[in-house]
Length: 362
Image (tube, rainbow, N blue to C red):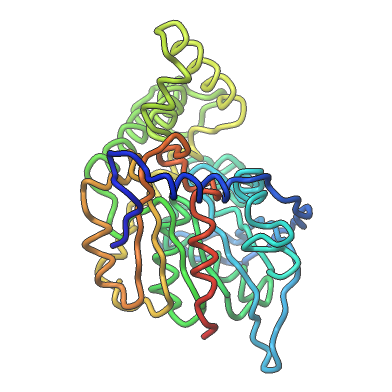
């Protein structure tokens, strides 16, 4: 387990200089191409099925195969809970990675950003099935991602699989379920163990709030139930660190203004069924027993101020030892970290990504 600096102390001047250098002006990057891949008669682990499952995706660049027909430049990037591929097409992420000369230069790599099942423009409960939508889990989501690459985009190998938060959890599963598919793995803001403790309880709080809300109407509401406000408030609470949240809201009146604004904005776009399903999907996540199956070099990166994956649990330090070619680091708290949201600020870790990409092709 590697740690940059002291978790609760000052960061050395050399590290500050490194991060400032890495966080320079974001490079321009080309606009993505978008498309939909339709999977016929998709069967879920629950036994449920859909006659047609739509997986929306965004791509940057073009795939290139070697003389044997093996694609060598594909990069799969997976988003977090409640997000979509679009949530990573932003200056802090794509602007630090996809531009000319950046670690994932779109002129060199074929970058694929899917919308997971239940998210973005992919098939989801709010499309019309509501609570009759199949109860998908993370393994269903990884299977759909695999089919998108293999069948929809004709990608038979990936240079890198990486993801943020939920996407980081998917990345651990990718390494176990398809161990020879990729050259390297980089899970961000995640732990290689089942969702438990505080991480499970805050999810249960949201799930229970929605399901027990009389206005939910078994998923058949016509206007969003009041419990969605509670859910959004909880997401605001866990997604950053206390220092940044206090800076945003240093007085009682400002705290009320900040949370009201955040909730009102998200109420315009969020859906209670979609969020309920997305949080419940983590119930089948448990990569721990099969960590030894991961063959590719893996670099796991968390941040010390992550309330969802707190470093004091020592889970990452313990479990990374079971990954044959695994390494881990925790980015120490600083004025540049954003709690759980640090996964999207690529300036914090893109040098580590560059080092990972020096791993040989397999």
